[in-house]
Image (tube, rainbow, N blue to C red; front, top):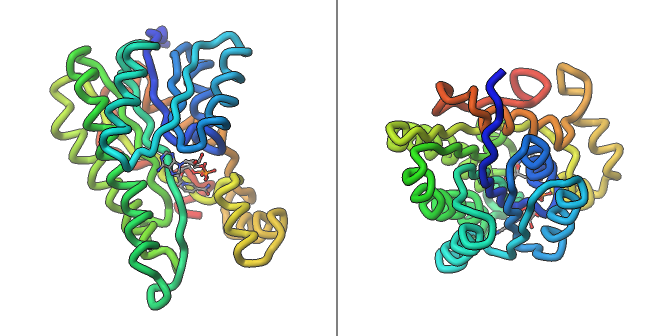
Length: 253
Ligand code: NAD
């Protein structure tokens, strides 16, 4: 086993769900964690959990699609916690609709948060990684990248994330920086709870229905995804770059 060198990690969308579990996992692995989210109060709760468990954390309210806000947030992380060299681009939204009903705003907002957000965050943080000659970027894709009814916007964004990740790996590798993507299947979070509400099914029934199509017979938990992210962030994953790992209880959920 390689000992963990403590780093400063940034997790976007860390207020809840997969992002919150990832922030807690990276803190448990010995890193200081900046929890970035639109929902500043909930981000502060994630940070408070980490601190009460003996870790170091900072919550920062930010819209990842806003270039000036992203620059300010990363500067604040550098000043208050240290230069970040781990970045998890996890912030995301859904605006599901069949193509013929999909508005321009549904399209633009999903592309903006996932793709523009990951681009802006990575551009801001890579400067610190290059300086350190070490870095880990992990981007959240999805099984929806392979196509999913009602998600033209989201599947385009999540497929785009995969191309973005591979290009980061190629451009940044010479600085000791790896870039990988984790592509979850269905994970029990508020994002899915809201989808269940939208289609008028209870959260429990929705998850049970989804689990039937998953080879391991259950949906994912946020910690399942956090574990995969943590592997890509580890010292020992330094020769793994440009990969997409489907974490879906089977080849795809
Ligand atoms: P979630 O909705 O529970 O959490 C997403 C977080 O992102 C929220 O706290 C939200 O406030 C934040 N966020 C949204 N827009 C933002 C913005 N512009 N700036 C900053 N923060 C913003 O979602 P989740 O289920 O935990 O999903 C996390 C990631 O994993 C997303 O990228 C999602 O697309 C992806 N994913 C989720 C699933 C799933 O089944 N839950 C499956 C595949 C991929």
